[in-house]
Image (cartoon, rainbow, N blue to C red; front, side):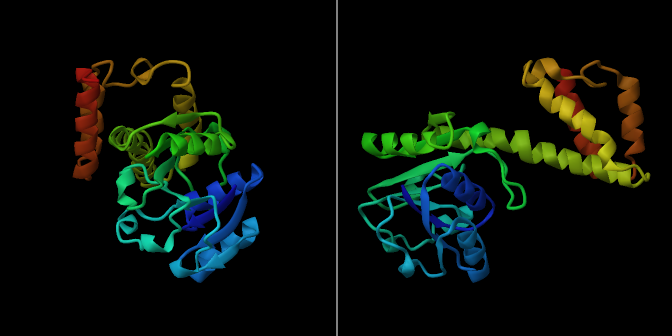
Length: 252
C-alpha cells in the first residue's frame, strides 16, 4: 500500500518503521514542525511536508497520528475523498473524522522514538464505517501483526481506560518508588528484577492470582509502619493507603 502519515511523533515513528519492513511504501510524512517531518521522512524514504494542502492525493490510506486534542481541529478538506483516512487514538471516536471513508487503526502499546518496538507483539484494534473498509483495515493490519481485532469506538474507550491503569499508572508507581529510593541513595535498578518478574508472572496467572504483599496478607503491622515512613509525603501516604485498602478488600 501507499501510505501517508500525518504526524511524526512516537507512534508514527514506530508505525512507519513497521510498515516499511512489511513492504508498504511511506510516500509522505506530514508534521507542522519541519525537523520532525524531515527526520522521519528520511528514515523511511518518504518526502516531508509541513502544510496539509501539500498532501499527496494518491495514497491508499492516510494515517493520522497526532495529539487527541488536535484531531478535532484538523482541516480534513485536505484529504482525498476516495481514500481511507484513519486515526490512531485510543480514546477518540471514529466520527471525529468527518469523511465518508473513515476509520481507526489503534495499536495498543506505549511508544517512544528512541525505542522501536516489535509490532508482531502488539494487538491492533480497527474500526471502519463499511464492511469493505473493515476488511481493508484488517488485511492492512495483518501485514504487520496477526493480533487484529474489530472494536467499536464505545468499547475502545474502556480498552483505553484499562490501558491507563495497566501502563500509565503502573509507570507512575515506578516513579514513586524511584523517588523513595533516591532519598536514601538506593538506585532504582535494584527494582528491575522485581519489575520483570511481576510482568512475567501475569503471562501465566491472572493479576488477581499474582497479587502478593502486606495488603493481600492483611498484615496491618507492616502497613502501619510503611504509612509512618511516609509521614513526610502525604500524597504518597494517601496513595499507599487507598491502594492497600483496595487490595485488602478484594474489590476486583
